[in-house]
Image 1 (cartoon, rainbow, N blue to C red):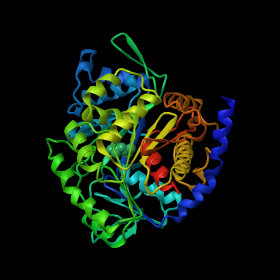
Image 2 (image 1 turned 90 degrees about the vertical axis):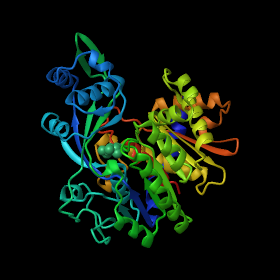
Image 3 (image 1 turned 180 degrees about the vertical axis):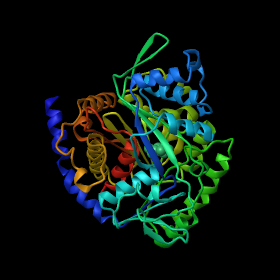
Length: 464
Ligand code: GLC
């Protein structure tokens, strides 16, 4: 075992050189959802008090609805995520509930939110020569969440690209999402019962008038047609609902994606799944969009959600299990068989897995390098709380590879009857390549929000 630690530690030695190579990437774009995150840490005690203040009872917790129609729903959402140690995002369409959150939850800090915004910042700091982010609303408060970097752009009202941090579309309403984080081991009490939080995570309560409608900025489309891209990272479908016409909005982006592919035959389009509550929307994303793009990224929870709509029978067999690496591998394989995206990446606590077609544009060795760069950058973000400065990116370089990931890799290698896999992280399966890396784990992460977006985008763009 100590030997495996050493082998992987040495494999990670390439990471600083890999970071330098990201500078070769000429242009990337990110769409669609950019917003402002109001981040607040809640303690178990604070949560107990909040539950009392809204008169929440144990019976209320049996309610399975995932819309935020009352303050009680907000508290119920936090309790669900806290007690299960999971991440979910629920929507709020009532301004009064939003105002209740503003006045009762408050926030510790504001930061960049939304996959498109988060990934744009990450890719710019990583050194991609030109990054353009799609924004639906870009008032000063939104601009302030962009890093002050000359390679980081957004478009103004006329479709002209400008430095994203300097733009100020004054009439736009700021789109603020509440990110309520909690720590593992913290205790919440309700009606005499005690619940221990099993894993640090967060609940997201979203009030957003533009992104939840998947509004698209025409100026950005013009920019993309004129400038092209090497990588386009897409997300933001996850907050659509069937009731609000979500399926039509998904369908409306299909011709856009086809046109982007036609104009950028060598460009790679990646779709980040994110937590999608509405099952009809989730199914449409997987059935109608995922097969069109080159790459899809997800975490374990999102993989299970995808399985729920694509293969309910198999989902039923996995739902009660504490999923380990071999389970997740089987789920990934099933998703690949169902949606056929050429490259699929699944990241979970301690390990990342990429499954791709044999002839994919990125070699398995390059994928492995990208995944190790991503694991290092993600651990740096967890350890420092942000990766806003380039010197922060490699904070985690040289830190111990988590035993948890090594054990997971071992389990998967045993399952595949492939002892070599635990050492190399590379193997083939039928006509596909499977790449796995154990990651660096940080004991007390300062933040978790945006971690998945960071992992997916860095491992893709860093795969060189
Ligand atoms: C979702 C949320 C956004 C958050 C992001 C993090 O898109 O709406 O607020 O920043 O997830 O991944």
